[in-house]
Image (cartoon, rainbow, N blue to C red; front, top):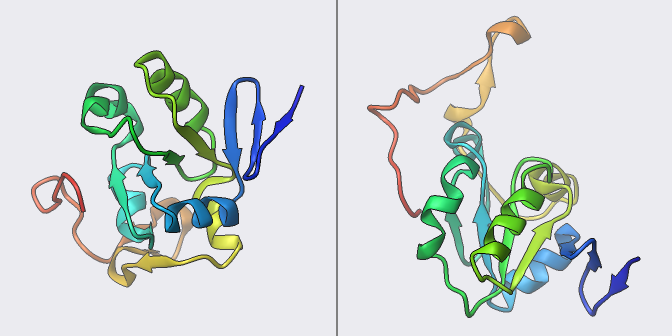
Length: 146
């Protein structure tokens, strides 16, 4: 059964926000938690007042660094990983969690603020051999908050 709130909707114990609802919450002080891998973050990032990047595979290990007194909006490329991340955070005692419905794909389709790095965008003659223009090897990449 669905439960509606001033923003978004609750479904199966999780809170989902549309991209526009998420932007509204972010402008009011929520923190965006970007769960995407480095390569995807390098190409296109959410342009919002406050965000942290924790790749989905390490999110649970680094969750202690997240604030528990602030709404966390979980985002990935399409919304696939946010449900699992939200459940993991709930198990760790986080209560103010929302999932960005549709992830970066929906955010971009809505025309919401983005930061892009043209040198990180993929290029190539064949989709099977696409690669970024800049070197994203582990030795050249930076980690941590941006």
